[in-house]
Image (tube, rainbow, N blue to C red; front, side, top):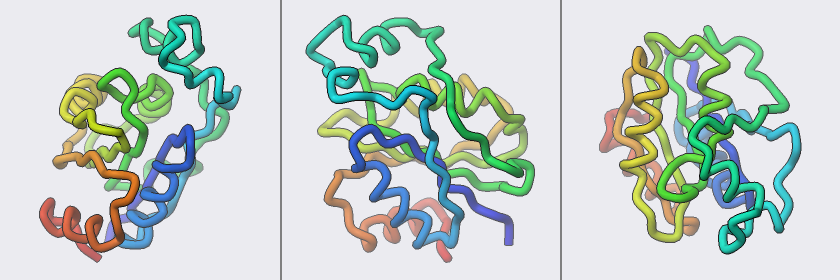
Length: 161
């Protein structure tokens, strides 16, 4: 069986919890996408147009640097990429991560946490970023999603351990 990677960026811990459940459900290896400069509470204040997250998301070319790298990305065929939804899309650190690797021929499954925004716009942007990859239907997961909810989603998209 091909190796599975569950890579995620989590600003508050919600996405991390779900990523660990996805890794457990798929037998995948977990990888936290860490920013060089961690986000503070003030950085995440989306009400403040001068906050770091607001400034980054306003600039479509923004690519916050990633502090760590996957050791052998070539060994993974299936990648789950997790993130919180910011302004209807993935935080730009996700694009920093994706653009640092040759992902041609791989399959990507996005998953996201959000209070209510869907994942469609984020997935479309990721597909534009990675045109030579295959995408399976992503999913926005509530922070209270259970292991069983995750297993049901995986079965629905044709992935099960």
